[in-house]
Amino acid sequence: MTYLEIKKIIRSYYPALLLEDLISHKTRELLLDILAPILFILLLPLAAHISGLAVLPFIPTFAGAFCLLTAVAVTIFMLDAFHSSFYFKTLDAIILEQGIGISGKEPISFETAQVLYHAPENDIAFGFIVSPPGRKILARLGIDEKTIKEFLKSRKIKLSAGMFNFQSFDSEYGITLADLAEVLLKQDKEFADFLFAQSIQEKDLLGAALWLVREARATRRRERWWSRDALGRTPGIGKDLAYGGAYTLEKYAKDLIGAPAGGEFSKTYLHKEIEVVETILSRAKEANALVVGELGGGALDIIYRLAKAINLGTALPTIDGKRMMLLDQNHLVAATADKATFETEIIKMLNETAKAGNVILVIGDLPGFIESAATLGSDLPSLMDAYLASPDLQVIAIASPDGFHKIIEPNSSLARRFEKVLIKTGDRENIIGLLEDEAVKVERKNNLFFTYPAIEAIADGASRYFPNEATPDKAVDLLVEIVPEARTKNLKIIGKNDVLALIQTKTGIPAGAVAPAERDKLL
Image 1 (cartoon, one colour):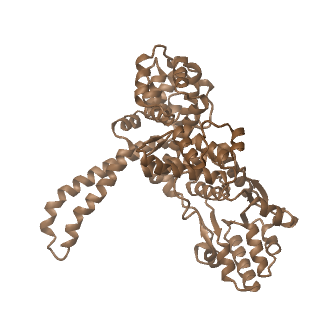
Image 2: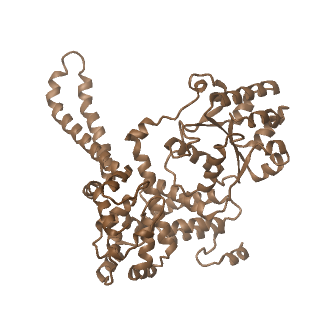
Image 3: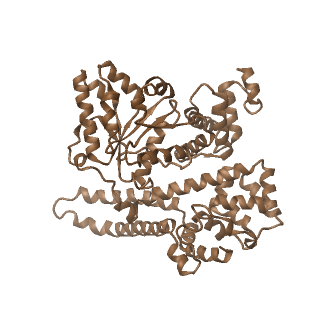
């Protein structure tokens, strides 16, 4: 694909690009939020005089303002829907019409189109720096606007669009910002030197770019509620569950699809483990997954993220539209006073799950559940064995490594019914992905901004300076704990040094100056 072909594609984005320049999506959301209460306030006087014909004198007073505000709100909504349609629409038809001959995927992301739209033909780096997504990436790297302006003034060597080899891009999402950033770093020496002078390494730039790419996709998924596909996709449920036949299951289990974990998730954190779980659940028989991980190591995150994927319609087709029911095992054990009652309830629940046909049963602590059943005199593994072997039942169970080795592994008949999925607690890529998700939530709530080096410092600091605590949980704790520190110091942008200062305060160790090998001597 040549640059001329890329330009043809960018032209199809022009309405959305122009609208983004005219009024940002965030501003459109704000206007709608303001207009809604104003409309409500205007209607209150009408409601107060609703009896008889007393309302008539008030109609001329409020009708004009009401109609005007309604028209503005509808216009903003229509513009937003029009704008969003360019985010979501695959450009296959447009590409075919223009004879480019590429189909099956969007050739360039909207954010990449924004960069190229703002770039003069003789300077791609300029477009990257001044475009909204490019500015956000540089902000994530902790580079202030004054430094950027000085660089643009002194810039001499420029990389033209014609020097790009667009044929080399072949990612799942077409040409993304991460692809563009990588090429800029390799081909535009002046741009690379500028970043290196700010102590920005290649991995930092690519990490920040990928973060923005994932954040943009998550935002688009969240804003897609108005689309025909989203409105038409209602996850199915078995007839028995839908019409009240699954009373026992509903009594003891929580529906994760009906009320999934709030917020948007990136695809980075635990994505490999989630893909393995999806594959296991897609089997024709014995489609049962056992997630093994330390407390706070992400086992429940896998469950909630899979529920979110099903809810959004992004899970594998074999499990799309299914329900995920999280068993409240403590409630079940507490509600049954003896072995007979417990086993009766368990058998009812397993029968209902299998009969519904589209329910995935989630057991949050399988070893603990087995031990609790044993206190009532019940052999839970033997009770569940026939059901776990059935192709009609799908189960995701969670176990700690200790619980797995002590309780599940010695029971070979139970162990063979599950496919084990091991979570690597200290996996750096997973932790950074989790922190990116959490940082976006914290930023929205507290009007703060985390740089990518700060996120890396939190991930590294959690594993290096708190080795005896669950790394993902400790990493999130560190991220949250820095917020009040930032407020005290009146910080809006949180960088690497701010994180290191917090770690030093908590541990008494000069985090930025002590090597990992020396840290052990100090503890």
